[in-house]
Length: 461
Image 1 (cartoon, rainbow, N blue to C red):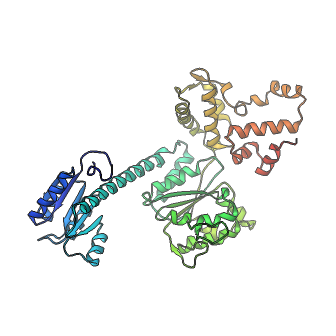
Image 2 (tube, helix red, strand yellow):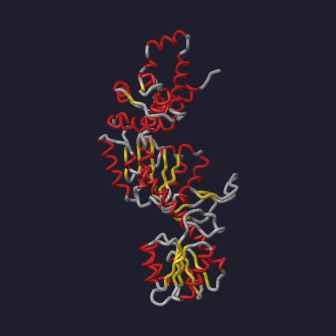
Image 3 (cartoon, helix red, strand yellow):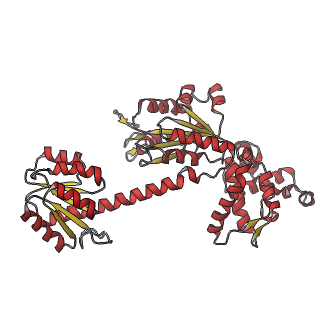
């Protein structure tokens, strides 16, 4: 498809434009204008004839008179919505009025032009309609690709526990109820949230993820609900919030357990009332958003301790999905290893290596405190380090094979007269590096909280 030369610069095959008018002279005149501009022009003298041509010729744009004998332009629009909903329609009429323009737009017309009009005006509208059609087609293609990449078929699992979980996910996806996904860090809660969105009727809307733990407490209210210019010192311009950005789609509140208590009550009100008020505004905006939340914390304990509102917990946990840790689903490890081998090898620009039975045994026997994310990083390291077509024990991180705790390694550290504090610091840094600097995951592997990890990483000098 292409637009007229010199109009929009969109380069593709020649575009087909179908003109519909019960005035034969008007059809002929429009044909001449369109052909001279480089289009393939077709003509029909009634709505019924036009419908048959649409099914046979699949035009890229349709131009129709509003008042015609038999089927009117509006009647033609209504039929086109059924058989060719993506076809842009331009309505032409000599009886222009606000009322007919509004009615045409309600029926899905791309634009509306009143006789008399110039050739340039008509060609500009046709050009814009083709650009809009091409953009819509690209958006549709990308959404299909996203749905394919984030659907259930892309969640790698064979264990009974994951099969039950995915069955539950498929049942919940069609509804708009709030879902709380729980599980340890690195178990893939975000993948399940995306699958819920792309399997739902909201799949054509946006999926907006937000990490509640990564936003400073002073900014989280503005991020979620938006603000007007001048609402606070640094508000140099207005900003829509994430609830509005996710309208007609899904808002994924990751690590919701880290949300400050000061914001929890406002979040509850927005979820229940489906209205949001930006900071500094006096009015509210209606939002249509499905909320999916995730946490690696024990929210029920947080409720009991007074750190999380009970009413918010019960509101977001209409349906709860608990993702099992990797150590409880060993059947999935060989499948995940194969998947990560292919991905890491492609990124490294080399052929995927093989694993012998002993190496796979190390991987299936290890407890994986960092879960799937730790496994992915371990395979990525092994692919980079392996010097043959086979990954061996030495290519895996020492914490998996136990080599870092071997007598030889401990004797080496002792011979260097290294203080226990320094050994812990070096080990903590090595673990942090192995998980690409993700402190939450490193803390889980080490069995400490984040504050303790930060303290161990500090250099006393």
